[in-house]
Length: 110
Image: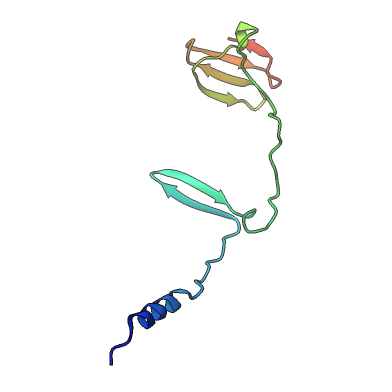
């Protein structure tokens, strides 16, 4: 006697309904590589642990302006670097120059 099609389908569905094992979420940094780029992911918050730091809602420093002092107008910024004394160097590509700013954002030199 052949089993009925309904029983075969029910058996297949029942075997497919077993709960899958959930892999543990790693706590701490996970380092991986993507096309030569090092990616570090920290999943402590996702695992329920509280991270040891948070980001503020306001920027610590804002450089550049649309209207105002021309020394603060930036265009095509290529790079920026903060020196040990807090001085900030900005490679302003649009004008082919380097601008120096104090740690509080005041323009020092071009």
